[in-house]
Length: 359
Image (cartoon, rainbow, N blue to C red):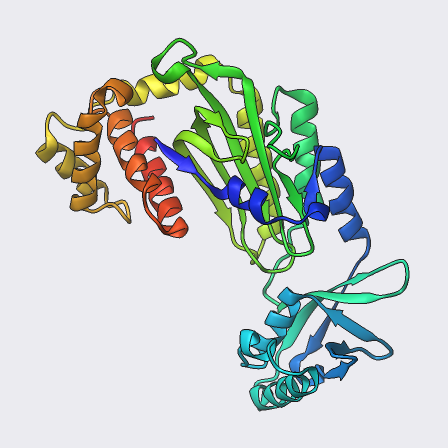
């Protein structure tokens, strides 16, 4: 079993105005961003910036358009310039560099850009995103509406309150994140470790900062800083913002949430029991032959061996080390101790793919 840190990182870094105490509040904020959104398409050659009172602005037909840190970085990428360096320069110099980079990068390969603006009631305009025309936007409000539906019709609810009252619900001008749990239907309440609850993270960006993602898991408990302890059975669904991304995201979210809503504790116990009773191999050699034959990317002989040996030491917790549940437990415990977050999540989700074999 592993410790999931993503909800904790969200809790640590989000400012007060990006924290919400209910799914309805989160949804209202997401709708606010959508209602104030304006979009257009413009060729790179038409982009121009100016410096004014120490800040860099994108110039529209009639207005100075504010840039967020994120859209400034996207504009810098379009100009083939390093954003981190430009942000340290005086505004006038940074604007000159951006305009020069835009002109040089265009050449004979001028391309259109999708531009997402936020128009405040005051009339102020902010550029939230500058992406290629291949980018397909998935609106955060489409996701939050599904979370409200889930909470109203099932025992699922936002994560238990953290030390500051946060419920794992976050949204800003760049992205959103929600942490939902089902604590009323714990599985194996009388079993090893005192039972497991079900939880999932869902995250998305309207601005090109990240893919749409659902990460579902079982867990033992959640700390007051939203570290998720004893996570297992981790499953990830990720959709890039291209093609029919909005339709796929809606379908995947509806399917996953329906599965969570309809699923009972008994059904989850049966799933875990299947993995506990599924023998991967009689010994390590047979296990290696079986797992390597599955050709699951990211699972090496060295890693599987280490997971099996760790499962042997934790047999009182995971059960038989040659079972799918035992082997997965050893692998996810290895993932827990990886210093790099991306490597940790990769191994956790790879282990989730291995567990599906038993089902």
